[in-house]
Length: 168
Image (cartoon, rainbow, N blue to C red; front, top):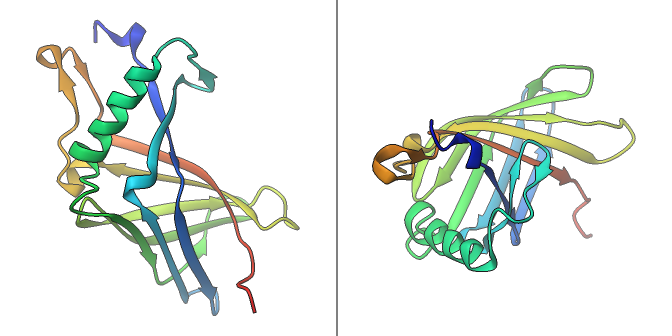
């Protein structure tokens, strides 16, 4: 729209989470990741891979964080964000995996597909991607200025995941 030159992506951090991954064979897995919704914070604004240093002031970041907690994640009522998967399959590339599962966000479950890629075979580090629609979780995408400023329904989640053995 008319405001697209000032548009940007928000990068969020999840500060508290825990997970469990057990893979029995290529078809059976038990994956559960639980995130503390109150620990999701806004890190910065970016356009592509470029961090927009002056795009958001500290008060902007705090205000967006409060709205994210109250209006999007509804963290007070739904303190946990949970992803569960029961199977794993091969994805794109030699070290790609697909985890079809259920994400429960803001108290509503919806099917999602998490794509994992292991950049180095010897490393327990995976890059993850997941596309989802906010409306699938009952979240109305943000709009302002009579719709001139709005957030897309589809959101791309990206991150890195490092697997560590459970303590004995």
